[in-house]
Image (cartoon, rainbow, N blue to C red; front, side, top):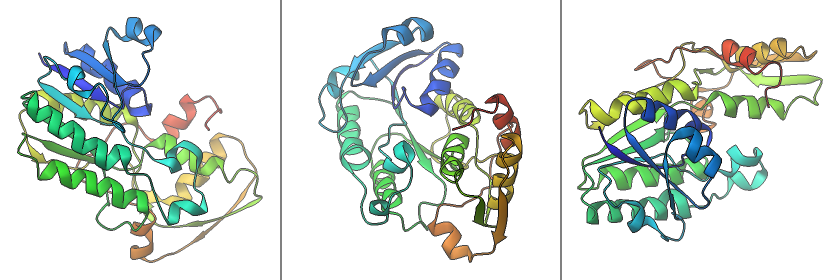
Length: 270
């Protein structure tokens, strides 16, 4: 069993990843700026105080660790929705500088396995956040460490967050771009598998089980939440779809559907 340092363990993916790792018998240490003692007891994990943006605490956090799962990211869009500034800039102190620091510290600590969580379609998206995330991924690919990169389509909670921003509008004009967002539980299981199966390099991408037009995902969101909104689908080019992050993959598919995920939220999706 591995001793694993997880970055981003307090986020949406981490909420499912950490239990998946401990259930597999691994020892898990979370790198975070603040310790959550309630979660430490609930998840049976260690806490290491540190900050990727400054480098503080990273070397100490890696003591005795043989595997790193780097899931931390700083996406303003994911935190508070899209704003005009997001089309012009995105912070890089976690995704680029923080990744560089973590890679260097992992080499000093003789880490044997560095797993990087990335995003499907980064090569085509023009959003500044995507360019920053791609730069961080490239650092991992160029590292002498033994690494796999796992790209996932956008998570269900991000899709719900995006659609929640439209709820006040009576009419939703939405693209028909095909996509297959994924549940974080499916990605967590994939990452837990990647800890021990020995596969390295760029691994198959993972997406949700259903490829549908974006407008169809929105229609299911509307219906499950009992909203009365008119949805007007419209086609856009493949280039624009990719630039907006509306992507799909068939390389590996998760199990949980969007409608099932929404139903589990009890009508209280974001």
